[in-house]
Image 1 (tube, rainbow, N blue to C red):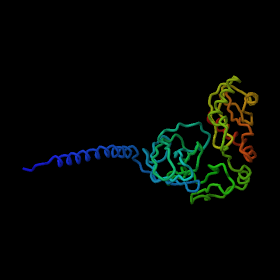
Image 2 (cartoon, rainbow, N blue to C red):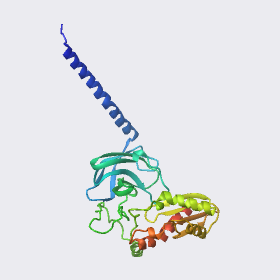
Image 3 (cartoon, helix red, strand yellow):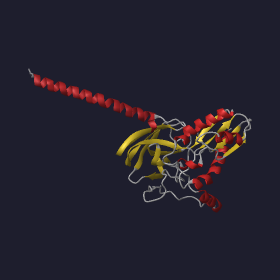
Image 4 (tube, rainbow, N blue to C red):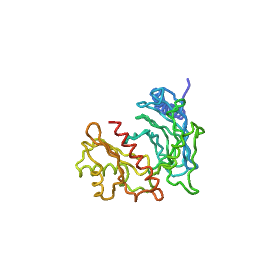
Length: 328
């Protein structure tokens, strides 16, 4: 008969307990991985496009899975990759989409972004595609983009933004200008029409918002100010959005009934902190009014960029107004 001494019994008990806890700790992780694999059963091949980073920062996409076999609105997707953040102590790493035309605000879920600290690591983001936009993963510091990378589905060229016509950074001069890392495919395609090229050269690049933007001219407060204006002028808003793709941000939408631009102009002249800086207004087929409006005073334009803002302003207003009219 084999006799077990107390010390031996205690050792065996600890060994059994340790094995149990190891199993208990790893089982949920394994179950989570299996659940993710089941939900995102389709493996997609990502393809990188335009990229722009502060020197030292980087994002690499390593895996893209989904509940559908292609990128399309309504699909749920899982994105994984690695990052290096050297330009800030902390940032928000987010998976967003740049819309291809005027769009209202879209909800942001907790799974689409994650707080990170200076250094390198892995990321895991999930997203439901709500529209047909260009996808990108970017660093956000203080609410402003600190660079990122666009990507799409390999073999589906329409999903990949190859070249950006704007910069994520407001400083376009001096030795501290961030480096722009572009795809090897940049510069491809047919030669542009010389007439179009001349117009684009005249318009110049989009102007980003100033680094210290007055909160009064943020999208949220522009909507609040226009809502207040509408109440004072007896206007009933049907749809209201803000285009924040470049500066100044523009308000656009539709109103019930027919109205002229002078109603907006007169009301804005009386509002503290805002001004009438141009609009495009017209009547809808249903008897309403579509509009696109600039209500940010020119004194708020970034120093040295006033001319660029004004050159692009009327074209932007017309584009937004046309899009609203066609959507009716």
